[in-house]
Length: 174
Image (cartoon, rainbow, N blue to C red):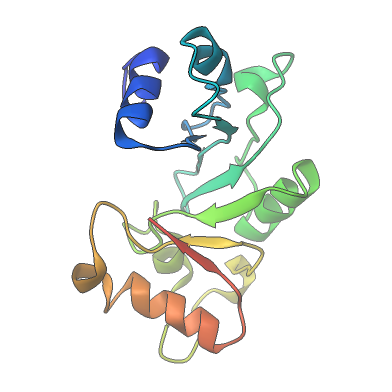
């Protein structure tokens, strides 16, 4: 739903920008760029990683990658999130794709799209307002979303350092 551009255009854009490992993270749909990469004769320079953006309309957006595309399932195997709490969903991801990186996307956006706002994460003390909704079962945190260090240092950069200070090894992504 974010864009209607063709996969060929996406792949051409990745190559033009020098992206060698594009990760496909479509909302609620599992996508594989590799057939298009091969069709365009670009396999020597680019390899697509299959992922998904779990887009809850209640408590956040999350990217697991790499995942397995399964054409026999709805949305190529996208995980359902309805009626699942965040800890349950995080467990579902770990069960379905135990070797996947699990990323928290834009944690400080609106409460329905930003997990840290939803749980009430306090970077100063590492506590949350809703501990029953909190899980540390993630590997990466989107610290930069179309922005840089200065505009995020008091928000997501602070969150990232707060997690690191408390022993949670988390990779910052952008």
